Image (tube, rainbow, N blue to C red; front, side, top):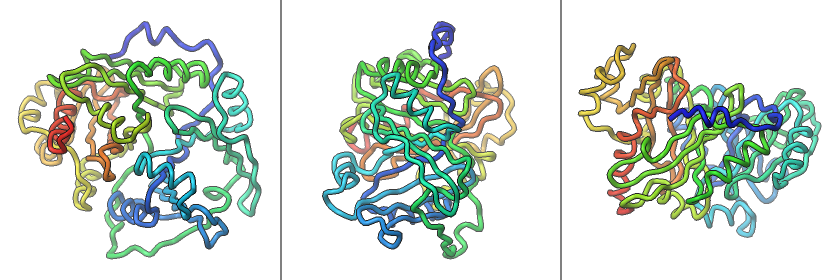
Length: 377
């Protein structure tokens, strides 16, 4: 819940100027097959490639784009490569969250001066597309934040060649409608949430946008704590979760048990029409969490008048929550790889800026039903 004391507890340092999310990079076991999954399942277009044919001898990467969302899928070409080691330990997952900045060198130097650990110093590369500058710092687990300065660059990044893949069976004739990254959620160990909250305050100059405790996020079996870090413009929101004591294993603890480190739990992507988006994703075979019919029987009473037909929402298992500024609609996929770790959220905001607090109980119970099926609750 939104707590005034957290809003007043703003960082005393100047905020690192971040315009928004630039890209999200996954380390995966088979980048080619993963690219096919995100093309056919989520409706992304393959727009870039880097690998043996471009002179990259140890790794292969595919760039996928949908509106303002860029995903990079990177795999190893050698068994002793860092990507292979990462996938062996953690399974497929997010390695890098890219932030678009106007001055990469300043952003990096500011972060390092404030205590961030360097992963890669600023590097400027010029090619036929212009000048591209990037640098990286470590954050929770093995996750990186990469500053990307591309104001003088036309392509995706140096070393990548453009790709135009012919659609098979007209799979993208029906557009999915994913538009932009809304927020990226990280899971950390018990007792470490506050450490990373302070990290984002002191290093990035971000502030606590919202705070949820056990009273907000719990069921009869499990609970978690969460603080949402954000920049003042609201273009970057980074919720940080940690497990809370419960009768059984929480979804956060299940993630940590299988990922074997803190890391990105889910990526929320905004759409302008969630009914059309989810219907198309389901048609393509993407699996979502199920919600009991009783949730929709009481929906009108709980959220009031909305534009959407409740029967349409019930058919697709879309959740709704109202805030003072408006309401939001959201739905969550099942895990999108073998381990029960990373998943996606599809969200449409109609004036609401929160995270669906009123849906937490229904959502967690849905997750727990899936955990029970896996034998992990």
